[in-house]
Every structure is written in C-alpha cells, then in structure tokens.
Length: 96
Picture 1 (cartoon, rainbow, N blue to C red):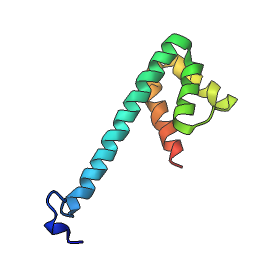
Picture 2 (cartoon, rainbow, N blue to C red):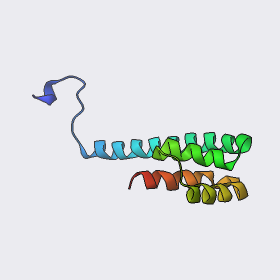
Picture 3 (tube, rainbow, N blue to C red):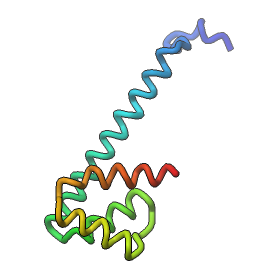
Picture 4 (cartoon, rainbow, N blue to C red):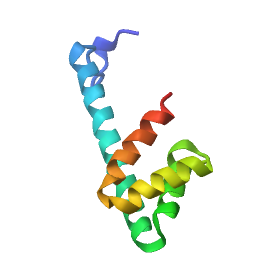
C-alpha cells in the first residue's frame, strides 16, 4: 500500500508519537478527574467506605479487602481532599 497517494492518510512522523503520549496523558487526567468527582460526592453523601468501595470496583474490578477499606476510608474521612491521591494510587496499582 502506498500511503503517500491516499488523501487524508497521515504521514508517519515522530510527532505522532508525542501526540499520542500527550493524548494518553490527557485521557488519564480526565479519568482521574471523573473518578475524583464521583468519589467525592459519594463520600459526602454515603460515607468514606462507600467511596473507597466504588473506587476499588471501578479501577481494580474488585472489592477492597477489609484492611484496605479501613485504611483508605480512615484517610479519606480525615482528609477529604486526598481523593485524587487515592485515585492515582489505585490507577497505578491497576497497571501492575
């Protein structure tokens, strides 16, 4: 296939890789913001344990074990602004 003759076919270049990396970072920030927003509302309405359970199911696809639930919930209850840090930590855990 001669891609240079196809109208609208992007030419391969190093810039494309950087655009992809930038887009992946943007998507991750958007996902972190979405999860943070939902978890913050859940914590305010239903409590820290519910918010932590939601994050575990949403990010890791499973419920937290009792130790994780209590640890994260205690931190979240004491400092509600920690939600983005918890989200980032769970996202990092999901990549392992």
